[in-house]
Amino acid sequence: MQWFAAGDYEIARPVLQRGVAACFLLAFVSAINQFPALLGEHGLLPVPRFLARVSFREAPSLFHWRYSDTMLLTVCWTGSAVAAFLVLGLPQLGPAWVPIRLFLLLWAAYLPVVNVGQTFYSFGWESLLLEAGFVVAFLGSNGVAPPLTIILFVRWLVFRLEFGAGMIKIRGGREWRDLTALFYHHETQPLPNPFSRCVHPLPRWFHRGEVLCNHVAQLGVPFFLFAPQPVASVAAAVIILTQLWLVFTGNFAWLNAITIVLAFAAVDDTAFRVVLGVPGPSPRETTPVWFLAVVLLVTALLLALSSWPLRNLLSRRQLMNASFNRYHLVNAYGAFGTVTRVRFEIIVEGNDDAVPGRDAEWLEYGFRAMPGDPGRMPPQVAPYHLRLDWLMWFLALGARDTRWFEVFLLRLLQGDRRTLRLLRYNPFPTGAPRWIRARLFEYRYTSLAERRATGAWWARTEVGILVPPVAFEGTADNDQS
Image 1 (cartoon, rainbow, N blue to C red):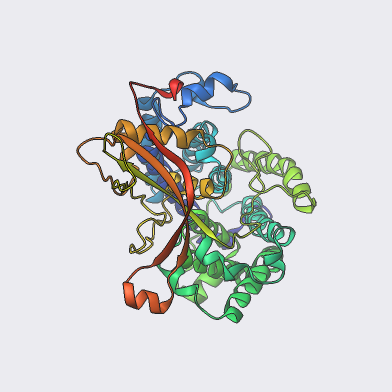
Image 2: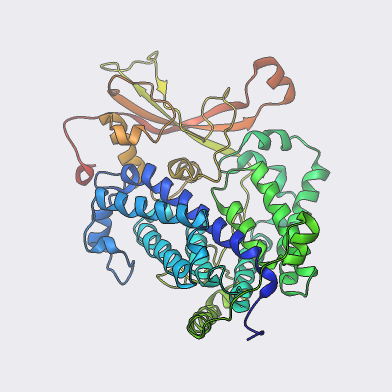
């Protein structure tokens, strides 16, 4: 069965399995910390209300049977424990069926969370994590050689991820075609980090070079993932380096981290030995017939599901971050088809006066990562995912679905502790404000001279009132908000 075994990818396998498991661990911890406040029984978009109008067929989830915050936390704590076990590599020391079952358990535990997560779980990296977890399950354990078909399918996943993102850009805004997108992106991206501020003022020829290198990495290099070695390893190295640049210049949850991990499917053991000097793999046992049969059946299933994303890549109406089935297997990916040139931010403020007058003092709530206080340095939060902060960025761009934000303001007026724990700073620690409002600001990085003079990272100008002052009267729940 030499054709079946990818014996030269023994080192890549633990990188793939442990890296994907680490991303699952992050995802479950994120859900533990944020899901109850955002989507729980008394959340901003409560899951029970969602399940009342959506069938199991539309969104498969064990929560159709019963949802409670306790049940959600039980699922997520279990998923976290299994993911941590796989990160340590202990299940991989046993028979091949052990990591298969545990990775499928991660996939089956996270799928119901995503399928009821609504707009808070509408990001492409959710589907990417589910697909990656399902696929790497069939890499087996240390006792068998990595299956060649699964190694190649992981490369196909990286190809769809990178080439899809490249085509979205070429088919999207003109700024990607005229190489000007990064004149703005480091400033207007969802959650800048400290290094974004350092890169933004660099010369325009540098930013044009960034865009050009991005096009090469996403539109040309992915094809070489299927070339003979060492070309495939070099292609993987280029993708890894470009993803590291994105890690250094932004906060995109675990998207870049998992892409780096998956790219190692194209790095063979020879490349690892040359670069890192690691020893060669130990001999493997004969591949069990049952393992061969399972892997071939799964490969056939994945190939059959690949027709939809393949057609999508070739379509002029290419979909971005689309799932073609309810189980998030073999998806379409892509991001930032257009780049905004101006940054808008929503500032939420509270007031405790009986009737706030023109000179009333309004106190600002602080979010964990989105720009607010102009003097605060943008934090590094990735690969952790702050879902509320990301939705605030979309809201400032004019997102149509504002139901969650209306309930969010209500929760602030109620002084809801779970909601307040999503924030960095609560200006009313001993109670709740009587009034709440939301203002829209235009933000830009301060110039070097302004930075030296004021110490501020941002300069902001008020654009208008998004939500005028409102007060909370009586007791309300989600059905009344």
